[in-house]
Length: 212
Image (cartoon, rainbow, N blue to C red; front, side, top):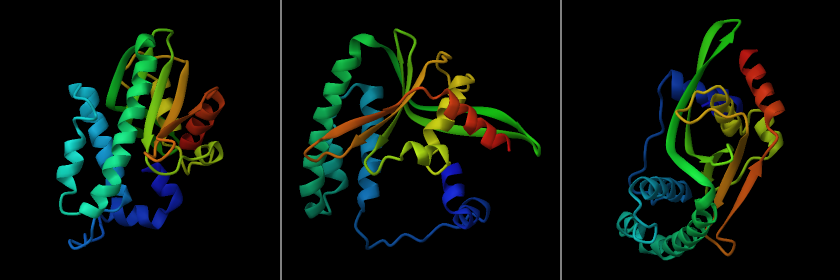
């Protein structure tokens, strides 16, 4: 929600303070954001149940059976994403201790106005045998730049790294933290990973920004 507050304070006030939400157009077909929501849900189910992503493709078919023209484009995209994910999982399997899926965490920040609880839910946190903790965010859209992360417009993973550094997630607390965006396009490039390392200064500035 902090990213929403930075980008659009009036929209944040309407949605989270006044509890106003736009009405759904029942005649409108699913948009690209819905595809991203489906991908997140299927990846969560895949990691928790160990059902292959290929087999979970039936969920896409069922969800979009009323929109065959979308199914024509989205199902092949999902198949390419599934094959790319499989390669990534195999590549890190021997180094991995455990993956934590849809992991919730929080920490209390002391501010001049009193204590403030910061909460976050990570798509995935991988803990490796060498002690590295990698916080992963699945993206079917654009990935924020480091500058956007530092200015708060794309601060989600820095907030999650701050919480992880302070033991706010139910994962082994480590100081060696990497954040990664897995961009799941499902097009010719299928997917790619953009990682950010050496985060201590960024994490510290994020904490200072919250305190101030």
